[in-house]
Structure formats: structure tokens, C-alpha cells
Image (tube, rainbow, N blue to C red):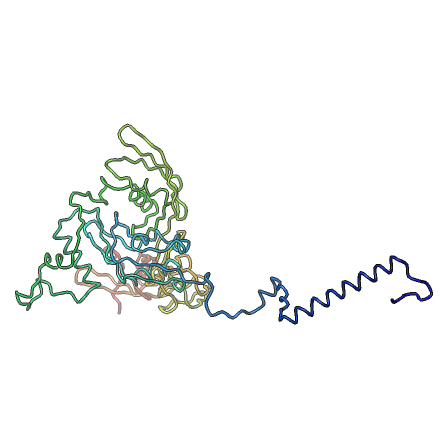
Length: 435
């Protein structure tokens, strides 16, 4: 046995330690040799989180998190009210509910009280979702290519309902048999509306005695709140997108004349979150409720696609119109493309800027001190003269001019570059004929 100090004998404790260490080493060596002999593999070391992130893992199937959300368009749907929402004509699974919940109440179309049927195509659904800011690349569309929407709360006769239904179906099925009204069709080949309806097994669910939903005397609480928002924000019903809570659906479906509503707006001054206090009366019973909704509006905005410099005249290819779903109304008046083209920028404008009236200045057509041609029309007689402008102005503005011959000063309306007209016949004596 090895002695670390040959001059001194080992003690019993040192001897015991050496014996134990030698036994453990021998046992470990024997165990390792046996594992190798039976082909056992040593487990790989555990990778840290940083190593897993940096490691590139080859996959043949994408992970479940990148699976596109699936939406199925119905072939037919029945709605109550004028607004057709996405949840009414499409369906999706519970796994995709989180994706479509923010746009479930998106209004796709508005059906008037005189039209019991309306056709909505898949392309129209995609266009509305895209305009609302939804990424269509992450959505898989299935089902029918066109949905026929039946409004069941309007008053119409059955023959008109059949005609409206067939007209809506004709858009999605153009190879229908010829109508009775087509010229040149033999009598034996003509098919009546009733025959088409019978052969197609059409089930018309028309409620002849149903009241008009848009009538003020039979309007629902939902319709009343939408009308109140439109009146206060000066918007049309086609522009407004109002999303209510699912828990308020039963309350919003209450309608006149069974119930009387006293609507008191608590916060309805702009888009975004709006709140109403509602008092619902039925006979002697009175109930109070609070309705909270999210209001958005469709707007046609004018966006710059090229940078504009100060005083630069705006051309037609410098701006483009875009339909978008806005969450807030702009305090500045919106500009249409035909209003902005030909005007000049009041400051430097970057690409992608929303063009409003504040960013536009009219191009001056007359400058102070310029000679302008003035026309006075009286009946079939036109008299022209030249006067000096005392102030500048743009199209449609009224400025003062001075006749250099008579020294008279009068007002004219600018009609073009250095041209104007006199507003009344009383200025005839102040105008000298142009030589």
C-alpha cells in the first residue's frame, strides 16, 4: 500500500480512507465497462434556453401557432335589422375565436327596408376585412363564394320575395333558365317564378305582418343608438361601425312599441368608446341600464405618395385616396382628391401624410398690382375692360380693383388667372370698353 510519507507509518484513519476510495473507483470502472458492453448510450447534456434559441431546428410541418385561421362563409343567412355583420354570414371554430372576435361585428352591408334579399360575395368580405386592417395572409377562406342574406323583419308580399330571391341567386348562378320577360323565348320553354321556386325547393320565410325595422315607431334600441351617434357626429349609417358587448345583445334587441326608450348620451362626442344611459319603460315598469360600445367610422382619406415641398403645386399622381376604418375623427376638414389637385402645399409634406385642409393653400390667380381682365354680362351683352388689382386672391374670392382711367374702385369675383367678373349691373358706368 502506498505510503505518502515513507518515513512514518500510516495511521488507521488514513488506511481506511485509501481503501474506501480504491473500492469506489473500482466499482465505477466496472459499471462503466458493463454499460459499454451492452451498448448503452450516455444521455446528451441538457441545452440551455439560449442554446435552444440559437440552434436551427429543421421542421417539415409548421408549428400549430402559425396555422392560418379558418373562416367559413355560409351560402344563406337570415338577419334582423338593416346591418349585415360578419358573425351573421360566416362561422369559425373556437380555436380561431380570438382571431375573429375583434371583427365579428364588422358591418359588411346595409339592407334597406324595401329589399328582402341581398347578395354578399367572398371578394366583398375580403375587401372589407382588408380595409379594416386585417391581414388576409393569415386567414384561410372556405365555404360558399356568395352568401344570400334574407332580412326577415321587413314587410313584403310573397311574389316580390320570390323575385328578389331569384335576382340575388342569379348573380351567383348566371346559368339559370331564361325568364318569362326575355324576348324570343318560345312559350313552352318559358318558366314562371313560381315554377323556379318550386323546382329549387325555395323556402320563403317572409313575415307579412312584421313591422318595418327602420320605422321610427318600431325601431330597436340598437337602431336608435346608431341613429343617435350618426346625428351627433354628423355621419351616415353606412359610415358608422358600432360594436356592442355580447352581453348587451338581449337588451339591444328590445324594440318599440312594446318598449319606450329614454336615451341620454354620457360620452358621445367622438369615435372610440361611447356610453349611453338608457331608461327602458314598459307600462308602469321602468328599468335603467348603461350601454358601452366602440365606435369607428369608414373614411375616404387622401394620402401623399410623393414628398411635396413648400408652395409646390399638387398633381394628380402625388396623392391617392384610401378607404380606411378610423378610430378618431380628424379636427381638420378632410380633402377630396379633386379638391387638392391644382392647389399648393402650405408646408413640406412627407410621404404617407394625411392631407387635410390645413396642409393646403389655394393657388393665387391674381396678385396685387397685376392688370386683370374684367367681364360684365348683362343679358346678351358682354363688356370687357382692364383694371389693376389692389389685392391678391384665388378662385372664387372677391377682391377690389381700380379702373386706371376713371379712378373708380369696385369689387370683382376671380374666375381664372388674371380674369374676373363683375357681380352686378350697377358697375357698368365704371367700366370702360377694352381697346
